[in-house]
Length: 447
Image (cartoon, rainbow, N blue to C red; front, side, top):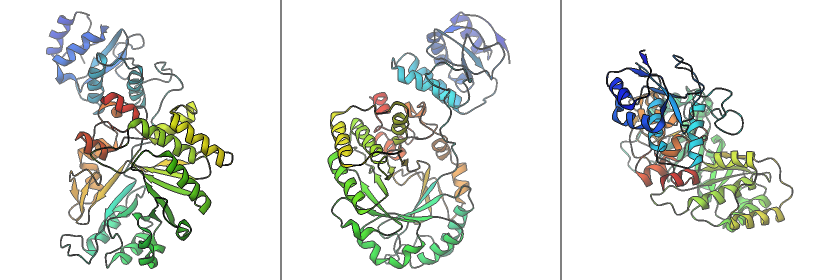
């Protein structure tokens, strides 16, 4: 690598045009202008704090992109794919955003990727590391259609058995959730379930009506769990089966209704509750309301109730903030609900709250594969290619798996444990990699 020194923007402009590397202090605004003029360098840059770096040490590890000056190394070869997104965000935020949270988030992003040393002082608290390792998908959603209708393009029994075996060959084995109007309606479904059980796969029904249980009771023994819709009007005692999990869809902002339903589930003896935020191209719940709802769900989880959240992966951020900061959310409506919860319940214990994995795949009844059920971008077909090959060879799936996202989701310190709701981003913003507009943090960035 050729290294030259200097601090004249015009002089550097000439050197950059010739492919030289730069290793000296330069005001960040000047470097920003230069990078705009030389986009071919965006994927070949490492940026470091000038007070920490040493000449020639391209793997050194400290960065503060809002400092008075920075040090940059332009490499001959592309080293990491994520560097391009780092520079893009640097250009975007360096002159445009005064928000200190965004500044800190950007530093956390580099730290998570190992670009910040153990003595990093650009954020408060201990060094930040990825909260979870981005690995294979955790859930496969499979839409099953009944044989009562003529679905000539659906997978045959042999193709389904091969599909099940392919899923079982993965490590760790993902769970399979059956979805659709009649997810147990295939004539060969018992054979499929028996085969899946023999391979050690956990198969569950994502969400069905109460009446569906009685119609398919002989098959329930093969299922790991059965999600049953609960909105407060059901006779909850009739649902007390060993593998039944009550599932509630949250369509609006009504904390009192959630509080009543939580109390009813506790009285009925349930220990687990799944709450889902439906996807739509118009979100009827504001980001501030999401924050109140999720904080209340966190409080529910401290009263001997395992809470599972789907559709709002930023519950991970809320939970982490509650653990580190305590009760940080001061919305009056939420505080009233929290006070009422404390009045009717016993002493709280340790929280037990989880976000359903945002790393999932959707397989349609005909074998077509999509990143998620509501992202209509077809990425493969399990009738022609193994699911594992589809997942590792598709660029969009790789970006989602590794949290290579846009906007604040791409630089958020919680992105590896959250990742945002990709379906919501796609339906509302038209981009599966955009920031999740329902999250309070990213909604500020989008606006």
